[in-house]
Image (cartoon, rainbow, N blue to C red):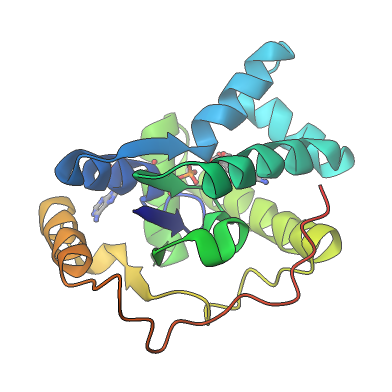
Length: 192
Ligand SMILES: Nc1ncnc2c1ncn2[C@@H]1O[C@H](COP(=O)(O)OP(=O)(O)OP(=O)(O)O)[C@@H](O)[C@H]1O
Ligand SMILES: Nc1ccn([C@H]2C[C@H](O)[C@@H](COP(=O)(O)O)O2)c(=O)n1
């Protein structure tokens, strides 16, 4: 089984993808971990590397190529990244989208990164605008198009434990032999 988890910064992808993988006995592959490894290899912090990615399109393409490779060759994985659902395409059994209001996400990020909420909010909005433009330019992907997802959640509506229970229940209700309503992914240029 391949499950993808996508969403904006601070939506709870890493935390809940890890929990889901553990609950289901699947591997967890985090785009964030690979991104941080790539930053460390170049002697940069993730924040510096993020800024660098705005000028150097090869960073997104390199990360996304690695993630697509994983999506198309591995099984029994929860794959989590901004574009995991788009990258996995038809290889994904289930594609999830997580989100939360920007004020909530800014608070979470401020807490996680020990910075003022106003700074986290401003950085997050700026980064999202930059990513939106890059994904359109590189892959013809409109990140605001949620039509490809099998389920989209506002993680702020659920406490962490109840959210994980809801996710596990959704996966358990999944029938791999039933393709009814599955949205095909068309028009993406996997041009890494
Ligand atoms: N359902 C939830 N309810 C409340 N808090 C949550 C929930 N899910 C995750 N969180 C908290 O939100 C914070 C951000 O989560 P996480 O790091 O998983 O986000 P992310 O989407 O992976 O972010 P990024 O894209 O920036 O790496 C964490 O501190 C996590 O504990
Ligand atoms: N093309 C990309 C670029 C970045 N990501 C992810 C990986 C991390 O979770 C995150 C970077 O950290 P953040 O900006 O949220 O602090 O973005 C990706 O999935 N695809």
